[in-house]
Amino acid sequence: MMELTRKGEYAIRGIIYLAQQPPGRVSLISEIAAAAEVPQTFLAKIFQSFAKLGLVTSSRGTGGGFVLARPASQITLREVVEAVEGPILPNRCLLGSACDRGGPCRVHGVWKQVQTEVVRILDGVTIDSLARSPEQQ
Amino acid sequence: MMELTRKGEYAIRGIIYLAQQPPGRVSLISEIAAAAEVPQTFLAKIFQSFAKLGLVTSSRGTGGGFVLARPASQITLREVVEAVEGPILPNRCLLGSACDRGGPCRVHGVWKQVQTEVVRILDGVTIDSLARSPEQQ
DNA sequence: ACCTTTAGGACCAAATTTATCCCTTTTATA
DNA sequence: TATAAAAGGGATAAATTTGGTCCTAAAGGT
Image (cartoon, rainbow over all chains, first blue to last red):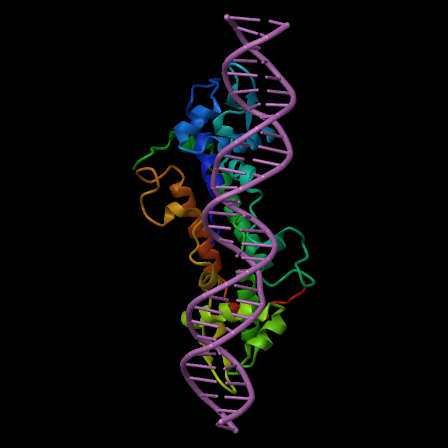
């Protein structure tokens, strides 16, 4: 239950790679895909989402590619995950205040708690910290 | 991201109904399905899982049906959710200690934290407390 | 015997995930 | 100004998961 999809995995691997490049260095999607071991066309879509949300800036044409739009220390794991997976919503009922069958359901508060905790944890992790962490332990 | 499926929702609604019956009272799957507003054949599968895991006891034939196997105060929301959705695993990498590409990945620790927190919250909620909580607020 | 009720397996449709392909747009530069 | 390089965006498709139905078997009561 509550699994991150491949899209989410790929998104994280891709943006960590960007964060590991020298500041300002432009990376091609082909380069990122190869390094992160992710299907290139799929990663291209993911980075489109990043660009739309302002996590990365993209430029076309010769010399184009992707760069982080902000320092990696100011991009949270939550932003990256939500960019591709949508908001963290353990239960549909959290969307509106009223659940399916009348007022708020009995489990509403519990899922709200789960949401709050997950958001708190993911907000506390920056892409910078991930990029600097040792790959093996 | 991290959404409960219908199966999980139905499971919760179904077992809450059981918990609201007088202790020892046997309920038919048709009765539970109607009360919880859930497709009956689907709910039957869900209750099969409950029975296998010992959350409920089932009996066949005339006068048969389902009863909680333990007091509702000793059944946690986590058990119910995991019975039908499988273990709470925010990332595949938590299954083995080694992630896909060599040692533990950089996000391993974060997802472990998420798992721990979600489990803690769901373990803290009993079906009894849900059954007694007001449906509307 | 016969009826009632759950157990279990096979099956199926819809939705979502995981991509791929192709054409367009933008940009640098030869 | 052509051309090549790169991302943007839409359509499409395969694979998997979700959400269910149906049928027969097994068990138990009358």
